[in-house]
Image (cartoon, rainbow, N blue to C red; front, top):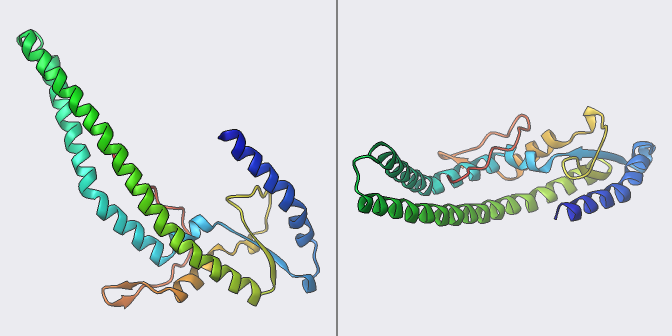
Length: 202
């Protein structure tokens, strides 16, 4: 899988690299080039922040259940350690089997929660991403850009700061896709932020 990803990255670099260099040297009549980080842009939009918060809230009960199971396992292990001299072999065996069964349950529940979370997260990100691509296309056509690259996906070793369109795309996305918050439209994000960490069920 790593080799396949590396090969794809190299291929993209080979294909896009010459086009990037030509665009950098293009005259104004030939158009402009821009770069952005679409993942950071999605996370910085008002809608992106809302859906991430909604996902965290949705999966909080499952996270709490996983934590409860972990605490029960730890409690059994502590009991086996502290009372090993006083517990009968039968009781130690019962506690060990109980801990093992809870470990299996914890593993299954954590995998299910993670898979469900990933599915929901990818679905909402793809939904926002599709709308953002349209915003990028409209902005590029209106402002004479012939090429816009995602700097997080394609190796770009240098780009002037004024080529970064992330902040402008976030602003335009928020204007085009207002998010209601307590009955009022959400304010546009003022600057792109790093993508929020993905909640990891424990």
